[in-house]
Image (cartoon, rainbow, N blue to C red):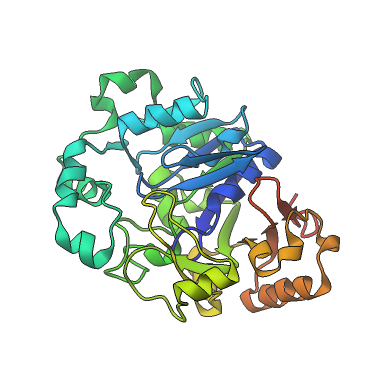
Length: 337
């Protein structure tokens, strides 16, 4: 069973929460985190919070092995720091061909005024490292002695696991409309960010995919430049309880109401088989912590059912609070468990 979890808007949708829940509930043998250090995924579980930029948030399941694929870009010091913070020694593995971001990449990127001032880059060195990779200058994980005990063939490992019927969970990064190809160019990230691109990153063909879960927040946020239809003022965002700051940069997230047109396109771009909605409690505070569909107020169920009809895709996972287990899981109802 291969499940791919992707963002449906501009990142910050709550993919980390969904993946941490699926890690606990579905107990995958492997979880693969795609992308790079310019995207943070947050986990809140049992009163503790983690903000991760490299490891999959499925680390919360102590039996799940955590893989970093060849298409990812990481920083060595940050990788070891996250392994330590999550107490994940012995179950984190990185592909021989994973790209390595060095301090000089960060320095070069921070000298680029175009990226900083116009695009709103996170300035973590990711874009410059990607340029070096395309130019065949980038060092890879196999070039670093300190990584030798973590090195494996990630595509081979994943495909072998699927051959024997094991479960693999793929954690995508950012969101559909930050895609270099399908997003609001030039206000995008330096990679493709839809489901098919993550399959390429990890080395798995499209015929092996069982489920694609597209994650939407109950409203839309984005960090940096670029269009945001129906954008609200900071005062209005605070009034609605939607004020947020980015987990990597600390910058204030721009906010807008849920965008049905973008959501439909994200479902199309990703061939979504399921939809997850997070932060429903920010729209309807009375839903906070609810874990059963039958316990939601009628007006909330109608809102979700109407959205489901509009997207023509089952809404199977509904986030009702910060904790990983604050989820209404409707997959059994849809015959998906």
